Image 1 (cartoon, rainbow, N blue to C red):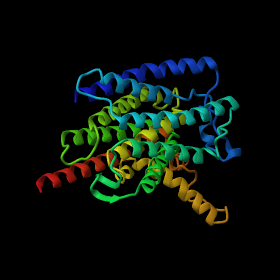
Image 2 (cartoon, rainbow, N blue to C red):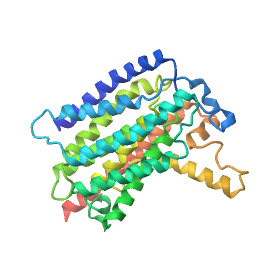
Image 3 (tube, helix red, strand yellow):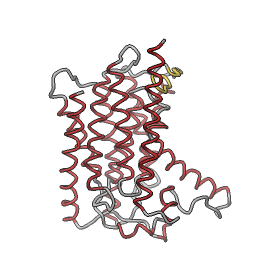
Length: 348
């Protein structure tokens, strides 16, 4: 438990200081986040935020990594292959996000060179990384809910790689879609990482029930990222002084997705990241209705759904806080289900 607390505290402190340094650095450069205007069917009501420093996700991910490393100074906490591959996945996908952010800022347009190709690029990269995870670690190759044997549907190698790649890829995109209001994505990600910290630490304390390789290291990793999100929120809370950018959204989404894979909570990810599912789902529904109506009708005033509520008259902070509450309810429900399943197993 001490290692978990150290990781969270160090992650938060480094993120707090690192984000402030990034704000100063990007302000000196004089360029920031471009916003799509009405001509591009973008959130024109957000135009006042144009020029705000972006790529704050760099501070989050580095702070989380440093917190994870520092926690290993204590004896008794070995580095695990699974955690190492999670970090590899995080930084590879974050690099794609960084390149897209860089081009957006350089061109001062909110669509980078990877705008239409980024989905295919990130899915291909994710599939390769999931192959590495499956072939080099003892991760259980089953579809799971609360543990490897629940429901325990076995998947052959290629199917497992495709399944987990879809999981992680979808989570990165869902977090990216959620990152549209000040603090919304970082706050909901913080809740998610806290959930995985509890799940992984619980598995560490009960190895007979949970078939997870070195779950304590996964708990430390998750706690470090939770702390890093908390430190970033100090500067990202409305009115935001910096945005996380695609580098942060893709990195955090990759971490959440791969934590679900490595803790054998595949299907529970839908509940833990419930707010992200709602956000991404609203985009899919909006596009479906628009195309089905011959490009004449839309279900929402604007998608993702947080913009719909803004245009309906809700102040931005109201939308953010209410969505945080929904995220907290989803995470609490997921943890409750996880513990209820544990209680059921113990009582048998």
